Image (cartoon, rainbow, N blue to C red; front, side, top):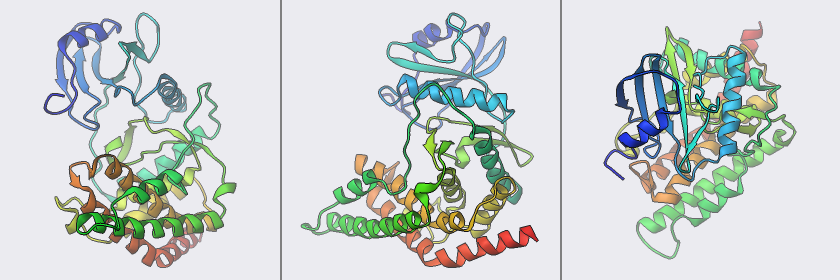
Length: 349
């Protein structure tokens, strides 16, 4: 693989673009963002500006992509801010298949990245609730993925596979960290189950509602991106993941330097934005921090097991940081959950 990840060859671009009617191409520019195995290029043509994406080989199947496209088209019909998919000129389809690859062409939308403002953070929660409302009646013809991070045997299996208690040094430290994460994961799963998880209605959710997957203008979302993780699950799992992604405090090169705490103001801003559209009962409010603990552990352990790293970060150091943050959430769970309930009461009054 060339430096910088997968890329398009000139011949491949010519072949792919021959299936679209977007006029003469004036400019092609690589977009090195997101999954390095999924190349993207920005195209400027007679018909406007577009983004071309090739999906990772072996990662996605046709039905999952078709399901994601059906979701996007459904949202577009409802007036929700999604990026429009371009149709192929020969088959009038949003999916192009060539040489076992799947290609997608999107109309390009300009916007700014998440700026951390209270207004933008509240809109993150509000638009997620609108997203859920718009998809409450969705019934696509393609079979969706049914999975989430809650009470998952896959997460437990991966935690059990980390490190060794028979060795010293990093292997033993990794084993001990995984053992402690397992306890926290099991405790949170148990509490969420007791609060009625199995009785909650399921529907299509985004699955990856985080800052990199949306564009803003004037602190309002103008486009939600990346529907690769859409699935069927209780909507509260989506909200818990959003609260985690937008409130986690980190960013320093070494995970050991990341603080334990989360941004509590952002937790409330996202939740309050969501509750402007959808009301949550007491049991669901009580579940949110435990669901955050579960998803944080799940998202961290899977890549570490696969590669030994989380992105470019040491797997051991990253999991130790996750353990500190999970302990902080567990310690503050009752207090912060009480703030959620108290704030809900103030909003009703």
